[in-house]
Length: 286
Picture 1 (cartoon, rainbow, N blue to C red):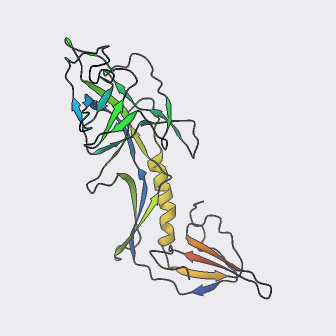
Picture 2 (picture 1 turned 45 degrees about the vertical axis):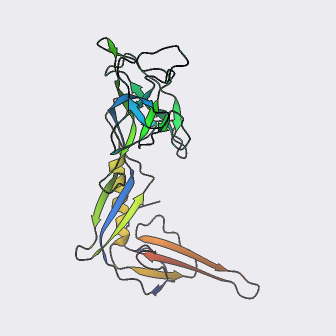
């Protein structure tokens, strides 16, 4: 539970202050989970080279056949590849069904033969963490998407070898990491160190499809950043107390520690709290 501080620091009647690390924090960066995009992306019909495992484009004069001995006869116009190294594609769209917080159920991505959808399409449900056989890895990098049926449309007198892939993807940044939404909060502009907080339960989406609602992830990330950065403001303190205290989600609390020692002769218990700092990279709680 994260809340905004009200009325100063929490009240601990029997508190004992201990030395705390000096604050040297310039900025606090609050990062979301990698942002999931969705756009219709151009894809090419490919076949697999059985010797190397890599893909190669096919031309529109390649026709379907019922001859089982012909190479790739069962996979023509069923394998589609997008040549974009900046995107990390998933097998599911950003549209979520059955809102289980532990196992969100998504809609499978699909390959569209042209720009116009003649009727509503309902794709099978998939789980993000499960093994999905409707995409395969290309040895030269990237993924090849597999359709249950050939995706066919006319290009003059030939089959069209281009289509649109509609599925979710993450974007790579210049250093190879995945793009996230980030909120920056300045603590002390004269300081020299920064703190990075990763809030992976905020998973922003960005889709241009009409069946995806208006996202609220950016607003939520700003609210969380507004609450979390406050624990780095003001003087840091490490406090001991002889009994536990409930803080009700007070944002100035960086961490609490319980210590119990049980024995027949002398039992011991202590409660410590870090205020305005997080133990670890910024210091210790004791």
